[in-house]
Image 1 (cartoon, rainbow, N blue to C red):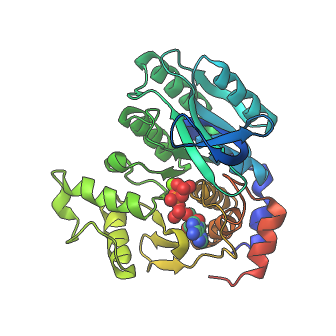
Image 2 (image 1 turned 120 degrees about the vertical axis):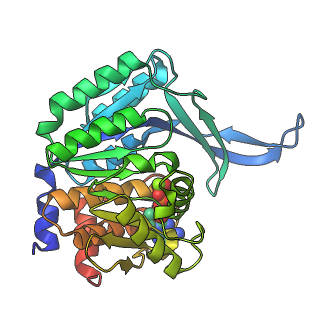
Length: 344
Ligand SMILES: Nc1ncnc2c1ncn2[C@@H]1O[C@H](COP(=O)(O)OP(=O)(O)OP(=O)(O)O)[C@@H](O)[C@H]1O
Ligand SMILES: [Mg+2]
């Protein structure tokens, strides 16, 4: 079995393809000291310029780059200024953009967070309501994936439910990755669960797991899930639901993230393992799920067992929740935490 040191030292030689909804995160910072005379809302006196960072699937790519992996991003942006800012910020991070396509029919998805020193005051989202993907563009994206897949050690699908990940694209990616025996992990959205069969792993949080059960129960095959309720109230509920999902979807593994309760790893033919969080202090949990799928997948390509990969991902998430914003972790920080932490 590889040591954590050896696993992490292999990160820089790995190439990961990240497919998903691309989002540009904008932060506007300032101070609030008075209420508007026009309406009962605070007035923020802006300090400096807005800052931009990669969000959605691009945050997964950013997490992978921060620990030294080579990353290519596949997704779509609008033909607008925000799209240009997005591409610049991705290029600055040395993430490959040949798989980033321009979709003339949508604006670049923008999430603006308006912040004071202490808290978020407002979030403004800009996206097309029905962001479905144009068939011609989908064809080009599918062709890109097919042509380039052999160059990668793993594929991550980061489904934020913004229209990029359609059943058609999912089926195509799963078919190609399974055929080529690539590690394939998916951060899932509620209504696509029936397309996730036989993949290396999916990484839903508790709410997504509940919704998965609800959605599967509504299908013709739903009675195969031997669960009375879709609510996961106790640890026992989580264990039972995880085992049923693993079996129903014929997954190699399933990693359910549980926020402050850490995560639970389910593996074919093995007993589930609960891993408590390693977080020392919690400032901002934004993007912790992105960190989990990034590090779990990368560690698998670098020789980790599923349990080691989950433990590494859990350490990484424990570090990022102690930082502000959708933060990332470095190889040095991660190695230190893994060596210091109790082994699972
Ligand atoms: N409040 C918390 N306290 C301690 N650890 C946390 C907390 N929230 C998240 N974590 C860590 O981050 C991991 C992922 O968090 P979570 O289950 O909230 O994922 P998520 O809901 O997918 O997050 P995201 O907001 O990125 O979608 C957890 O498994 C845990 O290790
Ligand atoms: Mg998530």
